Length: 607
Image 1: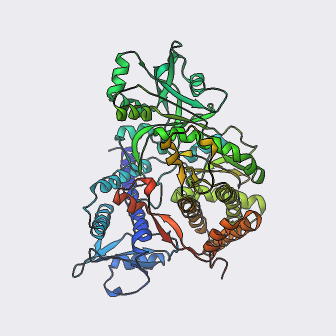
Image 2: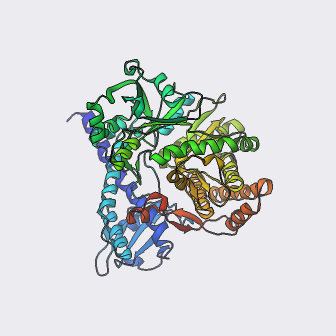
Image 3: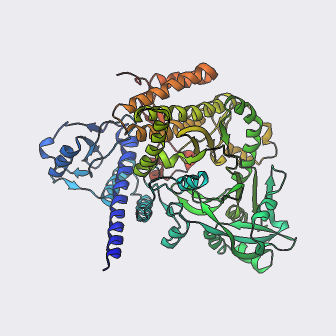
């Protein structure tokens, strides 16, 4: 075997090992936050049974200077041991060993990811009196395989100097995904070849697949001066242009293969109501969502349907989501001038047009599957960057473990050098700017107008200038909701009843979603990532967040915000989305449950 081939084998083996370790950390994160923590079945420190701890665990404890975390699996009647750096009020543990488990009267067993997955799923099955969830086990297995494939490809440590190149690198760099999800990289429906061809983490790009449809079958709506069809036709390859009786419809190449199997599509092709134009035109780049595509010369992102289950959901554009995107855009246009007047650096990427087709099949369900399968939403692009500004996906900085830490450190270092600050002071200043640009407008939209954003790590772009956040963009209207109790929105006239239902949350649902996405998924991860720079920095970052909560209330608050903010400052737990429980119980994402998550806001700033 050649030296190059041997190095490749080592890299693959290392990638598989890393993927398995990351899987175990994710599973422990989820289980401790959602199950063991709320039920009081976690202990950190030499609580009991230290004399029989495995020698390898003691060695890891001595080597790392950490502490041992005990997790009781009460239904199975066993316990886990693993070394962590220190206790964490929000469950962001830094693991320093592999986990061990023990049944009464049995020796300690070192766990790999398959054993830990099976163990925790058996515990959950007994707790809920349900069968073992083999589907979730398969999703975990798929996630590990995808992660290993990604890790086998080396990634540069630094972002490019050119802003749009750096932006694209941030979109395509989510190696590990959600830190509190049991299967964060699962994409069921992709073959190994599809994974190589279409995964953003592998730096891919590809041309689109085009169909032509007779105009009587075209479904579209636009709030722009041009129709969705016109905007797409302008950027479609010349060879896809047909006579005036037909309109061009692009789809993801994987989705084209999927759609060819649908009986209504096959019939429409035979009857010349639909034409197969094949693959062509420029290569588009998949962003972090996998199905939303970017091209630097196109002023719009294409949010395409993809009938692949990615983490929780099959990523198709449901018929009511096509309507809902435009309804939310209309509403945002009504309120954004006032919001931008208060927060001039706040941006929302509109979704002002959609396109699909209706083949008028007699079977309503089959016909809807076609409409949803071809559904495309146009999302506003990043064509108004300020001089020296680089947009970066928040998830690439905070949700990407070691690679994200290296890139975040580089950004903070630039700020430290530019302003003559220590690294810790620069990190604090960086976080201060990030929180101010994100928290204030998101809160104001909710408390003043009843608009519920989902500012989680994959929906937030941070504009960086001089090493410091200078603005934020929010995106993805699929997650934007309206508070039902707040007001009647006249802009919803003409919107179908199903689309209306999907757009509304109760006040409590809205707050839970914002609090989870903003604090738990976003700020907690940012604090954990930045806090690794210095031992006392984490407390100072929570103090920054506490300051901004008080400042928001003083500047913009009302009785609604006072109730929520005062409760947080008094120590009321945050709502953390229970991804492990939800996937185990096979709940739809909209019905996801939350668990109470303690946080140190009440004590922030104390020595």
